[in-house]
Structures are given as structure tokens and as C-alpha cells.
Length: 292
Image (cartoon, rainbow, N blue to C red; front, side, top):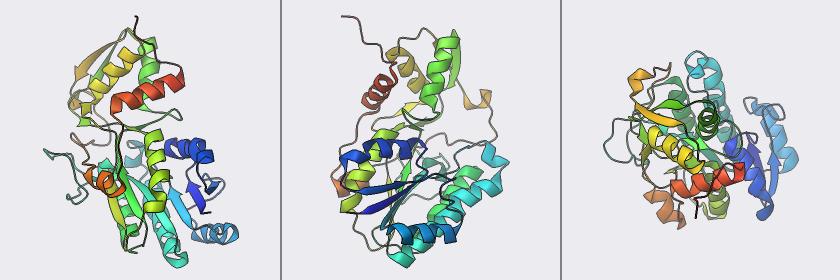
């Protein structure tokens, strides 16, 4: 039975893995930053030895995209240095490492979905530190280890765009939501299930990168409209341009991810984004069925 260390287990993906964990024949060790500081390699080494860890799923990340602009050192510490530590120790102990990265490693100027081989060009500190983390891991050429790039993550757990829209939809009569940023949401439950399902099938000679998000294509405006429709909220959603809502960090205008590689290699069927949103809203008790 694999002994799996899940870092960042209080986050969206980590929390979903925790909920799904009883259905899998693995022994899990769920940790957060207070229980295990992954920026301290000595502490992680000790934890690995004490618990005979043979697999690490790294869900830990600094994800405050705008705050990262002014907290570069902290963002780098968590998104790059900690990943380097995990990669170094995975190399030392022959551990399988699954690391979660982001669409923000791209600049968003593509005209077709990004593949794993497309050139990276992050436009903000968050994306830059996440890319640095990827590169730190790739340097070790880890066997049976992968990086999963994902986008627009939301969940039953934690803060997310979905929960923000539900809250604002109840408080306001109308909202302006950006229509010129295009991508696909990722339901953390789907990503968590995929990670746990493909775990025994991962078999590569060096670190591989895979893209994962739900199926479909939409803007944040489309996403907000569907949330309001499914939750039967009367809040009107108005489309606005990115320039009307300036933020400290630049977002990619286009970050659709091509998922052919992960689907083909692991024989995956990825859920459509509306079906996953429906599931999340039902879990939250916010889904209002159509009148018959």
C-alpha cells in the first residue's frame, strides 16, 4: 500500500483528495503549513523517513495572484523553493512526485489551446514563481513524476470565483464580469479524482508535464451567467473588458489548455464544465432545479 504525503491539504484540491481518500487503497498523510513546513528540507526529510513516504502529491502553493506582486519573496519560497526541496528529496528517496501548476505560466497570446510543449512566458510574479517551481522539478529528471497544469480552480471547499459569485449574486442587482479572458474552469473534485486514478499508471523515465481542466471553452462572464442561472439568482451580469477592472497582476487573455496528452496516455474522460458546476452547486446546496 503506497504511503502518500499530501501537502497543502487544506486547499481546494487537497481538501477534495481528503474527501475522496477513503475510496482508495492508499495510506494518506495530510499536512498543512503548520504541520509540515515544506520550505524546510530537513523537516520534510525527517517526515519522509518516519512515515516511509513513497509518493508526494504537492497541493501546496502561494495562489494570491495579486498579492504575489508585492510578496515576491514569499511567493518564490512556496512556489519554487519548496518544490525544489520536494524534488530533491524525491530524487534522493526514489519518491513519486505529483505537482500542480498553472495556466499562468503562459502569456495568453495564443490563438489555439496551449499544449504542454508550447513556449511559456508568465506575465506576473505568481506565474513566474510557478514556472520556476516546474523548472526546479524538471532539473531532477524524476522517474514516475509529473506536473499537472490546471486553470480557474474552484471547489466545494475554500474561497473561489463560484462562491464569490453566489455571495454577490444575493447581495447585488447587477455585476460587471470580464468577458475578454477565455479559458476553462477546473472543478477541484475532478482534478483530485484524476490524480488518485492515474497514480498507479504513472510510469515515465523523467518528469512529464500534463494539462488538465474541465472540457469546454468560456469567459469569466459566461461562467458567472451560468452560476446565476443554475442558482436561480436574479443578479444581472454585465460584460466588461479587462481594462475596466485593473488588477496588480496581469492575467492571460487566453489560457485554454489542450488536454489530449493526459486523456490519451491515461484513457481519461474529462467532465464538461457545466456538469461539474452543477455537481458543485448541489453540494453547496445552491442548485435550483428547473420548474417542470
